[in-house]
Image (cartoon, rainbow, N blue to C red; front, top):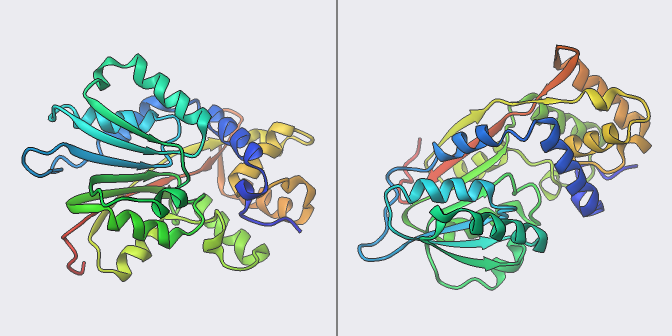
Length: 289
């Protein structure tokens, strides 16, 4: 049986191909993502007098969202230190190319670290950061709770931690729970089927204050229902975080039935809800909610 929720562990190449296809069927949505994450940068971010505001990005990818955040900060700051943690050489090169093309980022000092989150936190120094973000990346770290703990420890007093994850209340999030309930093996938090609910639970148990918002998004999954479509199979793998689902008729049938039953049809397109929840936690504000 397929190892449900372990796509990236099974094949990084298939995961990346699925990610690119997922982005394509959503039309890129770059303008929406830019407006969304720019509005989430806290205006109250402060650093010590005379020091440079420090930002840590976990799994920054090609830097598109990082640059949105940095440009928002530069609207009221003269300089920013930005440490980038990203294991992919290709993604770092794309990020660097983006920075070279955007002169508005000249006031940012970049510190590139080609590492996984685990590698970085094993070799971390005592630097504290005013803003730490992990945008849609905690699915792929080895230890969900340890990564959140390490991020929180590196956050300076008065700083903010931003985490974006699949909403546990969304139709897609509920699909993940259903897949795990029927076919999962072991501990779900050891797989990629992690949601915003897991982040909120980690914060709640530590009485850490946070605010949340949800970005509603529909994904065109029409191709998934076309028989013998390799693109459809690839997209379904990405949606379920499970490699080669087409080789598991029982799991594929359940997933497709659930998706069809919980989708809408617009202009002959089957649209599946894939909402992202953005959680912003503040340090030194730990009273119970």
